[in-house]
Image (cartoon, rainbow, N blue to C red; front, side, top):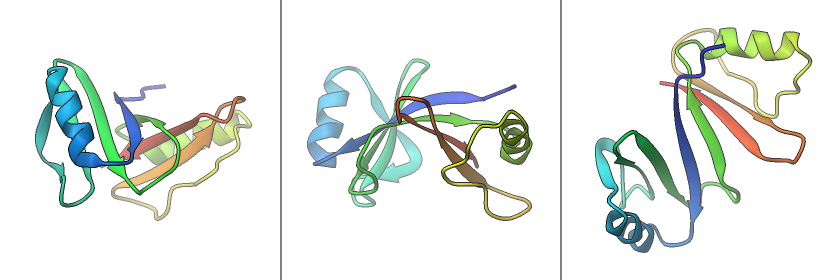
Length: 111
């Protein structure tokens, strides 16, 4: 099962302060991937990616970017894994969310 790129999506209280903190750790905001004004942005340091999201969700989320989220969904359903949020639509970008046994959210986001 190919999961694609991995990033950690962080629920933050103040995106400006969070951005400054992660910049101090060597992360840089990725062009065309959100903004402070949009209240979300993606940051990268080498091959490590994080997303900062203010007011969009309560808990942190592990995020993978598969090339075919619908095929991944079919595989998860076939294995008996419950979907918290199924993919909408039959083609194009989409995402699904599952939770592991401890309640950790995992999003598979095809863009």
